[in-house]
Amino acid sequence: QQQVKQSPQSLIVQKGGISIINCAYENTAFDYFPWYQQFPGKGPALLIAIRPDVSEKKEGRFTISFNKSAKQFSLHIMDSQPGDSATYFCAAVKGGAQKLVFGQGTRLTINP
Amino acid sequence: DGGITQSPKYLFRKEGQNVTLSCEQNLNHDAMYWYRQDPGQGLRLIYYSQIVNDFQKGDIAEGYSVSREKKESFPLTVTSAQKNPTAFYLCASSAAHHGTQYFGPGTRLTVL
Image 1 (tube, chains in turn yellow, brown):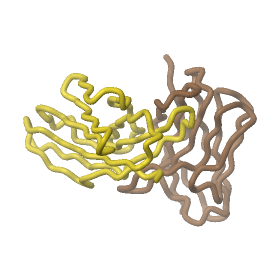
Image 2 (cartoon, helix red, strand yellow):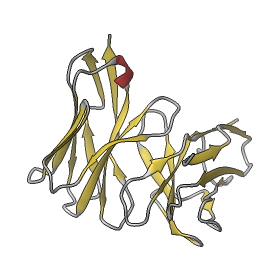
Image 3 (cartoon, chains in turn yellow, orange):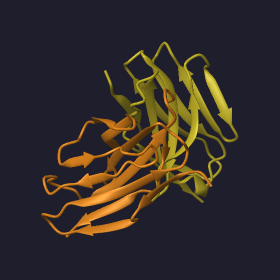
Image 4 (spheres, chains in turn orange, blue):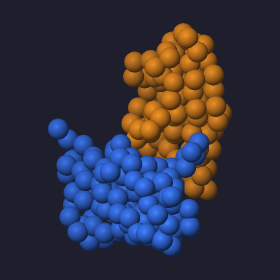
C-alpha cells in the first residue's frame, strides 16, 4: 500500500514532442505529490508538485494531471527539449509523516 | 546562499573501514534524510530525523548509523557491516510537516 508505481522505465521522445510519465498509488492517505528531476551525478531537484484538491497544475512547459478517483497522476512535458533529458521521479507523502515514497524513476531522452 | 552541502563529492573506502559522509543545511529545516541510490534505481531511505537528538530507521538502515546533534548537521556513517556500500548517497531536508524535500548534490562512495 505504500508503493508508488511509475511507468515507463525509459522514454525516448523527439524534440518538440510531448513527454508523458505516469504514476499510480494505493494509499488514499497520500496528500502531496511532488515530481523530481535528476541529471546524471546530481541530486534530484523539485520540479513541480500537486495536492489532490486540484486536477491539474501547470508551470511553464510542465503540467501535472491528477485523477483522484483512479489514484493516478502524470507529468506532461510540452515541447520537449534536449535539455529535458534526465531521470524523473514521482513521489507521494501523507500529511505530517514526511517520509516520501518514490517511484522507480523514468529515464527520459529527448532526441534533437 | 541557502542550501544543502554534502562532502566529499567522491569517497573511496577499503573493505572493512568505516566512513562518514557529511551533510549540512542552512535552510533552518527541522527534518533531514539520507537516501541511497544504486545505478538505474530509485531512492531508498536509510535514516531520517525530524528533530535534533532523534532519528528513525528507514527501509535499509542495516550497516549504517547516524547522529543529529545539531539542527543543521546529519552525518551518515557507513560501517564495515554494510555488505555492499558502493552507491550514490543523497542527503535531503524539509521543513516540519511539509512534504517538499530538498536534496544535496550527493556523495559517490566506492569500495575498493
